[in-house]
Image 1 (cartoon, rainbow over the protein chains, first blue to last red):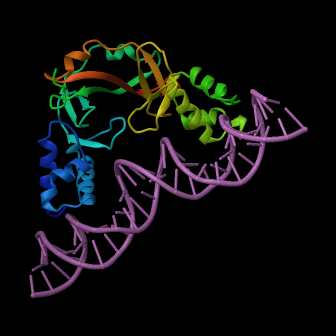
Image 2: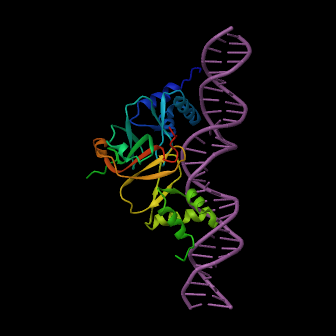
Image 3: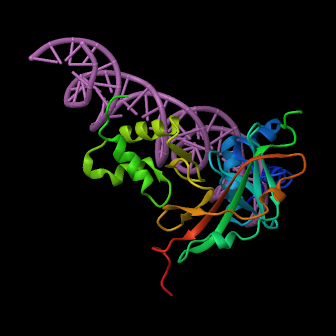
Length: 122
Length: 122
DNA sequence: TTGATAATGAGAATTCATTATCATTTAGAT
DNA sequence: ATCTAAATGATAATGAATTCTCATTATCAA
């Protein structure tokens, strides 16, 4: 792996975001640098491959990427601006939902609604 | 709306399934009837439009359809056979995850693992 | 400095789900 | 029995996300 001037920028963008970012979002954040979308995809996928990043798949949207090693958390997707936020914590009793004879491997809780920037003023 | 010999078949398939079905799954279930995939999509979308069916979107997969009016529930997706099952109930304390200033509209809990047909024998 | 090769950007190609098109069949009112 | 519009199937077209291709540029060890 040779030096890539963009690797740090892409990973920094992901690490400093409030939630997982899509390739397009990263590309837009780095718009000033001239980085190409293909390179963004390359670096994000490479990050997943070597364990620095985690791919986050939510319904109806492109794959997103977040830093590996975060504490257990879930996600909130704003129905207005479509940004996704990490939310720490986890509801109790998820295992009680698992049907008899099934084996739970993973779970995801997806909240949606208005983020603080998009709540309609009363 | 004229008589459609397939409408009942499609809706019956959805109603008698253990979880939401994709258009492809319905098409395969009705394979013996000669129904075309386009017609399956038409009838499923029509079902959603007139309130008989609900569209269920999960990560990484086609839209699925389930009967309207089910009690509150979530979904379990088998990581081996990719079937999706409805699971009744809901974990407590989901609202406590919502960040300050955010407004929760909906939530989805997605379990994944092995369904009873796919658990590896010990 | 040079050479092998990694990194890059632009855009073509791919993949998959879904919708649109259109010629044909068919229901069902008249 | 006839006629009009709905229903249908086959398949083309679309849309969106992602990957691939390839010519070019840049890195860095020797």
